[in-house]
Amino acid sequence: MADYWNHNTAYHPRIIRAASQRDVLDVGCGEGLLLERLVPFARTVTGIDPDQASIQRAAARLKGSDNTRLVSGDFITTDFSGAEFDLICFVASLHHMDSRKALEKAKSLLRPGGRIIVIGIAASSTIADITVDVLRTPVVRLSGLFHRETQDVGVPVRDAIESLTVVRGIAADVLPGSRIERGLYYRYLLEWTKPLG
Image 1 (cartoon, one colour):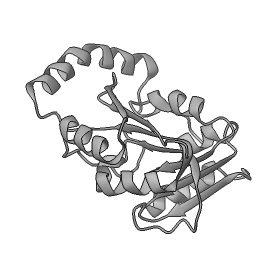
Image 2: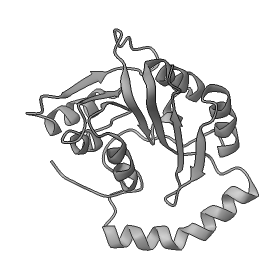
Image 3: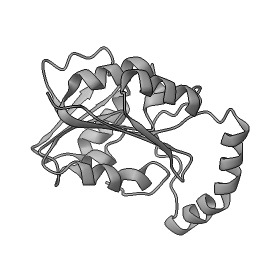
Image 4: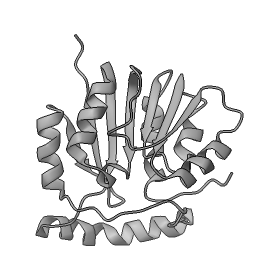
């Protein structure tokens, strides 16, 4: 199956570094490139996506892997039958769902000491947001040319509605102590570790 680079896959190494010998859940796994990349490093890899066509493509990509599981369905309403994870990631998927409910669900599925990593998309709604977007555009475009960016990989996309300010507020409520920073490729990065005990 084809490999490619875009503004989402640029952050895959960050997730892969956190996945070593862990049980990982990729929420909104799309056509499975991150899952495929996680297979050699994680103990188990589970992907969930509501788009059946994407799940079928992910299944083809993961054919022959014995530590993977794919779930076709809505993350918030899916019953994971008591499963727990050490790492739960959302790559450009959190804005496709109710972010508060999704983060609460992820928190409930996480083992103590486990991590949530969100590579998220937020709406640019303030002068600061727009200024940052303008300043990083030349670098982002040059990087896209250098990496031969693939913008459309044939999975459903959606514009973000919530601003970074709103996301920060939700994260502060649901995941106290979480860290959020702006990434280069029009993404924000959210990380949270569930307390032990």
